[in-house]
Length: 262
Image (cartoon, rainbow, N blue to C red; front, side, top):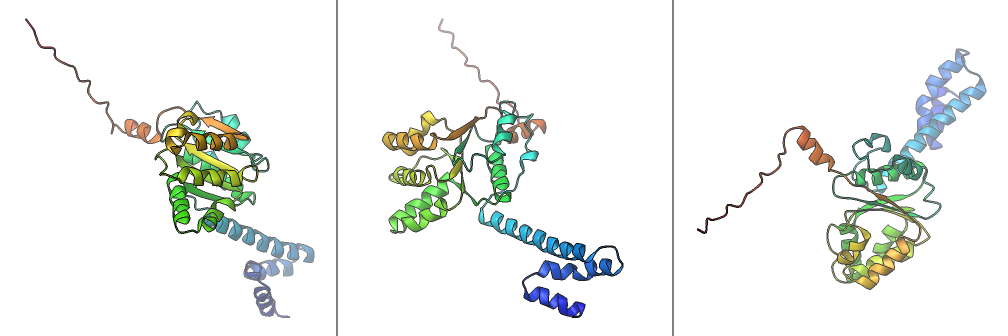
């Protein structure tokens, strides 16, 4: 079999990466730089690495992540209220086989979404399915499914991933009936898979978000049963950058002039 025939056979067998490097590795073998076993190992390892890269690319696209920020890019020195050791422990991903949840709570702009996405990327690299959504989009999808009598189909998108990331919980109140739909989702995932959620609201204020105190109590009972909570306090990254660039100034203090009643 000629090198050209070997290359064509590899392509037919669905090994395009191996076919691409065949001539290069074969040249090394002919020059006596590697043994036959090493030649075969190099070809197979090249194909394996290429398949993993394509697998991760596909998984990452399916995860619907809004950006790709790594945990090593997070500046913990700017947010000293975050326990870096706790985040590193979460990065071990032990919360996934535990089917535990993670809550990142704090004001806007303190890095909650960055941490959530970073953990999602780590999960993808370890072979877990991940899906990202905002709370607003999630509610809209569930409401549309309910109104069109396709709730089960819509719900499947949020039930199938091993890790569901829900961003911006609490930024907008839920419309009527949405709280019950959200409760159904939480109940279906309870002790089966994990949720990573970011919120600018403390749990005590979730009743205002969901609009139903009974459903809120039931939701919190389930999602907090097995959960890690990360409270973040501090100034927004964006506000800090504006101040550093001299683009933000504190508003002037207004003083009230009192009239002389004499």
